[in-house]
Length: 249
Image (cartoon, rainbow, N blue to C red; front, top):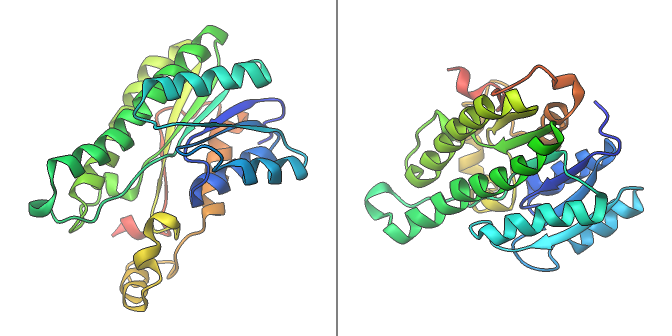
């Protein structure tokens, strides 16, 4: 499961999952382009990875802007001479009830979580098919199959990511590019900090998880490293569920 010499882009690298994924890929030997929405947001992580013996450069911009994706791919080429891996991770959430969800909020979630993956996926894949090899991992969610109150926009976006992954995988596999996804369950990050620290929520949610606990960003990162490695060379269009068994019931 080594990634020595390979070049990876991680979107949303400054978030809880993005940071853990970036560390995991770097520790496995990959050289990284760290994408964040705001300039300078990944500078600390880049310095940390460098201190650990890794290599990383930063790029910023809104994932809904095609120029951001193009800039990230160009940065990979300029800094490291190519692109082997893309992890589409940048995303937003929403807890508005269906009847209270505005069109602006709906578009914000869908454009970030789906359009962003499409734009980065297309830009990266165009570069990868020229080389005849590459791996793309889309970060979905257990919400791709589980509905929840207050999750209409977010769940819809992750369901779309699941089908986008399968569609990309089908078209790109003959051209040497593997596309897969991961579906994390409840993983404490900055996106959900408002409720995963609430004792009532913790008690109610962990009661639905066979393992009786939340997952960690590092456990998600391990699955991503696997999917990007040669160990997953025959894994195409898969969705690895990382939820402690919650979706089994």
